[in-house]
Image (tube, rainbow, N blue to C red):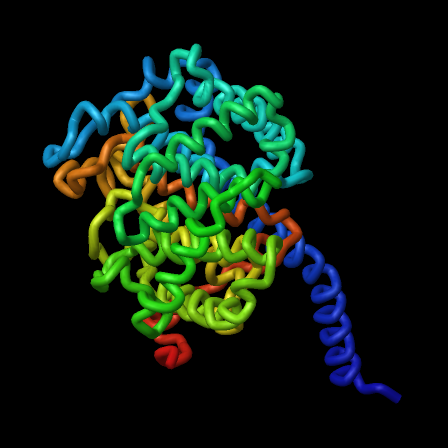
Length: 416
């Protein structure tokens, strides 16, 4: 016979089990809803950054509407003003390309994507049409840089390339071939030339294999300096160029080249180790509040400093030491820190020069309003569906949060 005390314990246990059964699905739904909400926040940031550029270029009025602020130290005012529009467009496309290529999602996200797809089709057409008001500058040094960002975006978005009118495709090819007139600086610039040729190769267009070879060979054989980082040319600089350009560009060019032949097959495993190590370093750069070390040139690119971490996340190639949830949480913090800062945008919604708000002295001699849109590359993981662990995993503390709240965290070790 069960005593009153035993009966009470059994009843309590039963209630706890029942409560657990009832609350577990609710907790799971709550976590799922929180993750979905975080994606919505990212989409809002992306839309805030990209909309002025894409909407106005689609309407053939980007040159009319976009203010062109210049660094007070600008080296060639007339030339920089002309190319600022291609800077903005190419850099936005390099960040939103994977998302434009994605299918599905909530009805709100699908509607937003469809709108951006229509804008993108018209934007590309206006950018390469000599008769359009927004026809862009394709000849010269800086145009090579930003044509390559557009090429990167088109590689990441086959949907866009395949849905362009054949006449527009021909005009894109003509514009990209114009960049061959420019001899790149002996630095990360050789990857800009390589990316243009990778675009041609990716879509079955005759390409210059030597320009691809040049970029890969110099970085793989001469410019790796150790612990997951390459020098930017002959000299190493402690900045974010491994992320702004070098490693994301190398990853895409190697990926395209692998479809053509096995020429770089032997280097792929080494690059994989290098890129994973640099992802670990990047994750540890992000402070508890989403700030990060203010080092090196081009700091006004804001979240573009984490182009590499966003790119390797989008490729689903994060190292085992980093979980998708912690990386998403860290990058969310970066977005909030850099884009929610007072005066980050003008009253009309264009980016202001700065890292945290409006800070014109942070601009290097080549910085214009258009340059700032490299921050769009942080949105690359939006190219992953909501069901992917990057979005579906619960939010998690990143290394700095663990370290500075007394939680245990793994020690850091160099790559040898």
